[in-house]
Structure formats: structure tokens, C-alpha cells
Length: 238
Image (cartoon, rainbow, N blue to C red; front, side):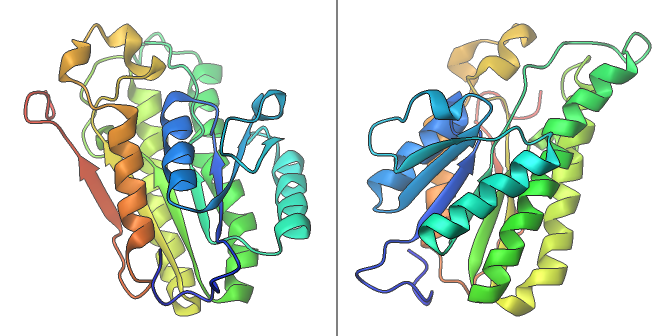
């Protein structure tokens, strides 16, 4: 746990995992809950079922600013705090080369990844600034720096937007005790990469990404890790 946060012994820290119903988000939510946090998961279908150990699941479409604002208003009203935000919402990526890509396919990637992370981070920052502490973790990708598979340009550009957003969050919020990190994994065994044709045995597992988020959470708040890349010895950036 953030060793110099304002959390008291009888007041559990609160984490919100946006996209907590997906493979990676679900693994992150479970790891944080096991570590003793009160975990709320949010997503388009999150309210349908509350996973074991999770405090609450709320419906939130990150592409809809009003739903995002309503979700954070509910969170603040019920729990009175927010110590960790994980932006892990994702969408199935349709492999499409640039010359064939439709504008709506490009827009869809950005509405969920870069724009969705912006909307959620903006709302979280309002709470965390008042607390003068908190962490924001954006689940980006190594493709943000160098696209690695043809046909994923929209995805890569949207993830690059999340990395850039992370830097801006640190510039504007570090003075209030709020830290942001872009976690950039290589291929993860999840629906996003099913169409890539890659060997799953060479991929990271969702639990690997969850371990990275847990590592960040346990750092003292004085430590800033702006970007954390996760690769495998066998996959790397092929």
C-alpha cells in the first residue's frame, strides 16, 4: 500500500478498475482485492454480475461523458475517497490496414482507449486533488512506441494517446500528490490479440499485468514511475 498515503488502518483504500469485466481488468481487480483494497469495477456490462471479493460493479461506458461523470459521482458519494484508478477499458480490435480502415474504426479505438482514459482520469483527478494523494494507472501497450503487427494502427495510435496523457497528468497533478503511470505490456493472452495469430505460449498473461499494477500501488507516493514496459524473453517486440 502507498506507505505515506492518508489512509488509516480502519479505512480501506478504494480502487476503481475501469474495464474490470475484461481479461486484464478482471485480473487486476482480483489482485487488488486480494491485497486488501475495496475494489469497484466499471464497464459497459459490469453491473450485471459482481465478481467474488469485489465491493461493487457499476455500469459505465467510457465513451459517454455523462455516464463517466455519473459513475464517479456515485463512487465519491458512497465511498468518500478514491486512492487508485486503473484505466483498463478495451475493445476488440478489427485488424484493418490503413488504406482500408474506415474512419469509424479509427474513432472507436480512440473513444474507448485514449478518450475514455481522459474522461475517467479527469473525474478521478477532481477527487484525488482534494485528498492530495492517489495513483492513476493507464493500461497502454508497447505498440504506443512502435506498432508491431500490421493492421493495428488505430489501436497503436490510441495507446500512444494514453502514454501522452499519462505525462500530462504527472505534469499537472504531481504537485497535489497524484502520480500517473502508463503500463505498456507486449502481447497479452486476451481477446485483443486473438486475431494476430500469435502463439499464446509466447504471450504475457493477464495476471502479469495485474502484478505490475500491484507493484505500483505498493510504492511510496513519493516514487513516480511514468512508464513501465512489460515484455517476454520469447516475444519481445517482433
